[in-house]
Length: 153
Image (cartoon, rainbow, N blue to C red; front, side, top):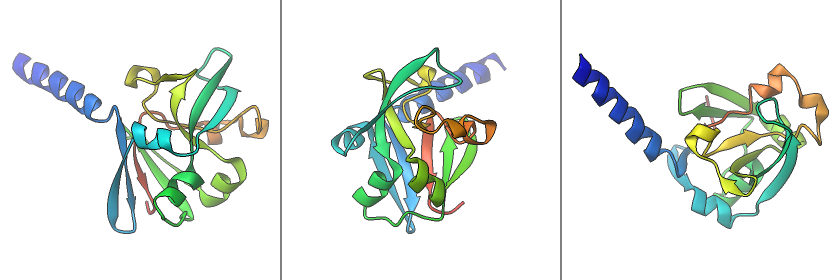
């Protein structure tokens, strides 16, 4: 039993490392692996905002969903499905993506985000620009430790 526990811990550690630099987009019957390096080469958007999980305003840097889908020449679907490292799942509608411009953040206050710090990828809506989003419905869409994006869920 003890050996199984150690093996499970090592496996979890290894899987965390595997996800530390990339996520997968499942779209148009293909899989695209997107790295932090690739995101940093796209047009980066910066939001200064306070979130329920932060102590005051912080700077989040990332790529708009629109930019990400355009970069890979993918249509923006009616609903985008998101999955986190812990298998938490949520969706964001195309309408909300276009109206509220969420980003896939890969930096927090100019630094990469570790898995322990809700990274390496965190979906952020600016609650400063859109205070009406400061509610449980939109908080649940700000998925951290993002590992997968689906064009169908």
